Length: 287
Image (cartoon, rainbow, N blue to C red; front, side):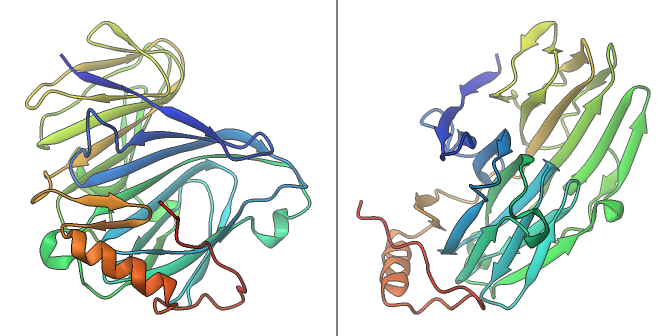
């Protein structure tokens, strides 16, 4: 039977909510994915814009994918890029990067909707200390597969005979699936580890209800039938299993506890870089 993971909801203030699915005590990763946050759907009030101050990462790539809203990304490499629905921001932290995430200027002072996913992909051990990098891929550059009543957007990695232009360092599966009412799709067993995250709509998997807000980790080798009772959206994610255990502490991911301790010291000593135009940062947690 598939493993179902219940998300933990956090209120970030102003009615803005985030649901965390990974990591979880029952499942630390699916393929290279070690972190999954569902943002919203929420109304961002005019008086409480998104304001994630500069913070660091090591050993991972961050992936942002939106259905509604916009986020302005700025990092210590000098990149400044707004992400809009359907685009992909892929930031490779490697040996270390600092970034901020804020409401874009054109939305400041205006209430607006925000809805999307933020994920972290652990880098293979041989690439954990690679040079940091950032890449933006507009929605129009991502492959789309059209099937009867089904639209598949290949966000990252390979699936359904197509490959995303997003550069990945391990085999990756990340697909946005939109189904019309009564449409169905067999989930192929072409990747070793897979999970489905129902975003909205009525769905069943092999005839069993698939509730939004829960991550369903599929059995290896299975080819279950996904069916929509009405228009629905679901994410398919996974890929090649990790090449060993990963330690996750705050925003740091590494195969080495000692490396995480070094990253803590580097952040406290302000040795991880600056984001142009930013004059504050998130301090190292006390825990």
